[in-house]
Length: 329
Picture 1 (cartoon, rainbow, N blue to C red):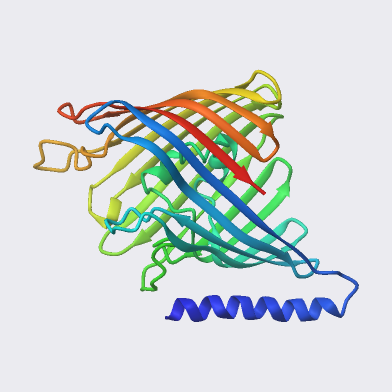
Picture 2: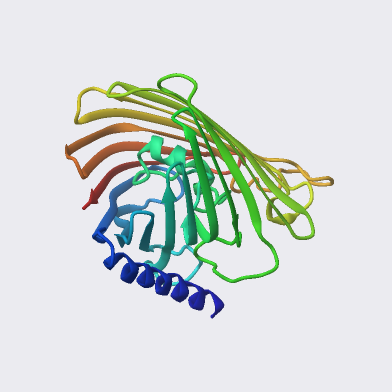
């Protein structure tokens, strides 16, 4: 209940700003937006002979510019909760925030979008096909209740920091545990992007994540990126560690056709007294490769093959062919 009161206060504050803006020369503005992810997929190999159409995600919301410095954003996220329930689609509140931006500084407060994999996801640019490795394996969440601050010193150097509940936007309960962290972005030369990120949260044990990302891009031609993360004491369990590597590349044949490929690897350690890695059932490697066609600016279609090789030798490979769709307006 405290969280709903909090969200209500965020929007009450926004409406106050709106009224104040009406008295100035600034004219408030806003726009609605919708983004839809869908696919058709069919199993090539593996235990499941799954095939069919899927509506995997729908985002819809509203952005409003209340004054020169203040803006609001509300986003609803409809997708599969994957929590064991019979519901295949559930609507979550993804963003409900007030943002202040002036000069090189910005601050967001409320149910905010986070930065753990924001830049990787933006450059990967195929979220409608697959999440980033940290998002896919629940190493990070894309939104949470808290505050996010950023400062851009110049085009080559930017920092960000946050404090948040730590549970993510699907679990808005408040407790005595917070997650704090931040990152640094560096662009030393044209086309090269480097990011370092760290977060930590403590209960009985300290859970922490260190991540790095490196990419090089020639706009309109190609982009390559490599990401690595190291998670200590996952779920606040001592010596329950994980690490992951993700590498991807895209090559533009022309303005509408693109080739893309990606490789992921997720692994965990063997705890004392164990015979297997503690996360062996979910460890493994993934390969994605295909071609994307963009007939319109806000429409993308991709044919691709996705393969998952489990780390556990007794488990079967899972290979699927996908036809993915993205529509937004």
